[in-house]
Length: 224
Ligand SMILES: C[S@@+](CC[C@H](N)C(=O)[O-])C[C@H]1O[C@@H](n2cnc3c(N)ncnc32)[C@H](O)[C@@H]1O
Image (cartoon, rainbow, N blue to C red):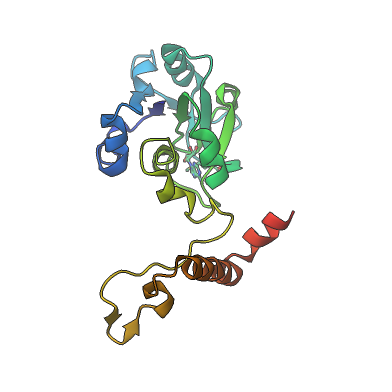
């Protein structure tokens, strides 16, 4: 998979993309990351990428030309082009699974007040990571990259993510490791029993209980 980030702040990606599983995925040749600073595509005297909004109002608006020119440079006709914006489709695990099968993904990251409306025409999808407003799309696209890349076959073991929260339609069951007892808190007996069928049943029940308590909406969604 090739992932491109159109951004005014490429340096924000450095730490995240060169650490942990995202880095390992790149080292294994399963993913390739590329940042493009669209200021370099401004093509005007002061490399200006934003301007005042027509009609007045607060904040600056991203101009269309630098973003269109950066897209011309990538020159892909089969890419998923994701425009980061609070008014987009809410990102979730199902969406991450869908995107993990793509060959080329482009993230267009806004900053300032927003985009010139004509930039939306470049997007195959408009995506939000939640109902809050970030300063820019960079952190949103990094969170999405993490969620997508770990699902690419060969990045982590399939068993490690197929029982994750949301993948099963529920929240994950509790985990315990050694010691058996810590500050009066004991590991449930069933986990020490060696009875795999009982352990599976316990995990399912705990998963269901946790989902009912914390996210009943997920169960309602499954029933639809
Ligand atoms: C300060 S925000 C602009 C918010 C815009 N004025 C609005 O009300 O929708 C600047 C940029 O951050 C990114 N952004 C902010 N919140 C986001 C979210 N929840 N999900 C994805 N991207 C977001 C978008 O790229 C957006 O263009």
